[in-house]
Length: 214
Image (cartoon, rainbow, N blue to C red):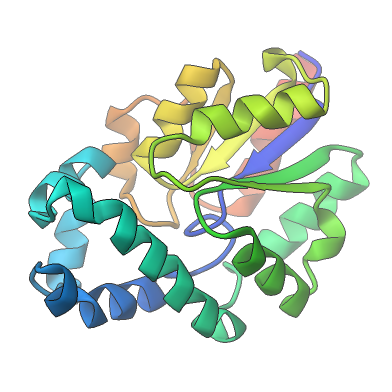
């Protein structure tokens, strides 16, 4: 298999946004009519799929797009304080040196992503950033990225931390590498059957290298 591109999710995969998201979600709880979440509840939510988390939130479906928009806007105010996950920078540098096209496919705002990459001197490693407005439309963004860069499904790997990332990769018919350092727990990720599950960026590099040799 000839791997040409490695596409990454952003939140929970490259950027450690967990504490910021939790703070924002709790700040908006009264406005959008859902209960606040503490760290004990957060650990339980990590063992649920993305769809299950939404169902448990009891947020009216019509409010979800407005909530997502507000969360992204508020995250932009905190972006300068966020940091990348440990060792991900080294992995990105290695992949870039090996000649892979490296991109981001995210449901966050592109301006948030670019601000974070520039602040943490990671922008040099990325060839493209694609963003979308919905939680469950990443497959369409992945497909657009592949079309823009004339990539076949066999040539692309997607790397992400949530069950919805697995679903998007499966819908786009590309290989999925789930990471255990983000939002969803390794247990729930494994249940959704990604092609690979890695626990650190070094394991990610090994997966890419092994696929490139097959």
